[in-house]
Image 1 (cartoon, rainbow, N blue to C red):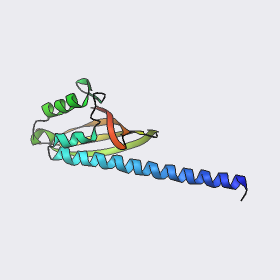
Image 2 (cartoon, rainbow, N blue to C red):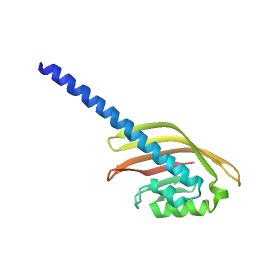
Image 3 (cartoon, rainbow, N blue to C red):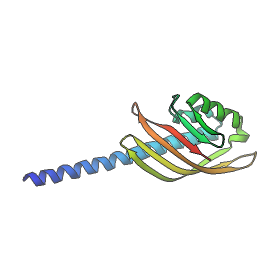
Image 4 (cartoon, rainbow, N blue to C red):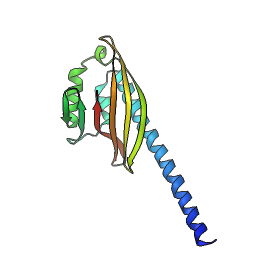
Amino acid sequence: MKPIQILLMALIVISCTKQTDEKADILAIKSILDEQRKAWSLNDIDAFMDGYWKSDSLKFYGSNGLTRGWEPTLANYKKRYPGKAETGNLNFIIDDITKISDDAYWVMGQYHLTREVGNAHGTFLIIFRRIDGQWKIVADSSC
């Protein structure tokens, strides 16, 4: 085989591997979001928070401004959503998942809560990073 043919074959293999990796990343991220949806709908805020990076560097930006850290974010969720009437049933519409870098994606979408206390809906932009081999939400802007 000529060197140019070997180079072209290598580029094709690399390209296919990257596409496969990206598809696997997106499937993993969607799976985390689905687990969060299920946990929320069961009023299990602790399990919902498993999708977030358990770090003081986590950032959540919502109607009350910026919250820094996993613990304060958990506390805010529990305060605003104390029971099943408030959490209700959660559904997502994922509008876009875009790779930012080898270990980061952003996810844009919509959330819809069907609840006893009145339905709620809005949009979100979250950033996932691969940390120690696991995808975690490191930043969330929901409104």
